[in-house]
Image (cartoon, rainbow, N blue to C red):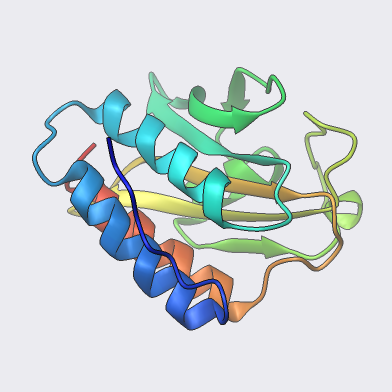
Length: 159
């Protein structure tokens, strides 16, 4: 059993503690799916105001659904399509305040209003993306982006 102390009083502390917890969860586990599953569960448990948290893995030139928490999701996303596909195509974090204004947005959950997608890379090669959705417009800020980028960076060597 894992028990973590996560300080939710301020975002910087929250992400510092999440990074430490994720490190503990994945340090000795070689299985990528197990590590993504625990990461999605950890994020879902501690980050407020999410309606989806999970992974899309790069497989045969497209993004394929991986471990997640939330409602059932789109299974396959073309590189360049929607927010996840844009993150994969550009290898840059996508922080979208209003997904309904994003060209080509893919609405897997009509309740989603904002989205944060961070590409996961190892040695410059895309492995997949970490995707967070919220029913609240403009839910994610620069602190969230940096925090999730740190989580993705840690995971890049463990998936």
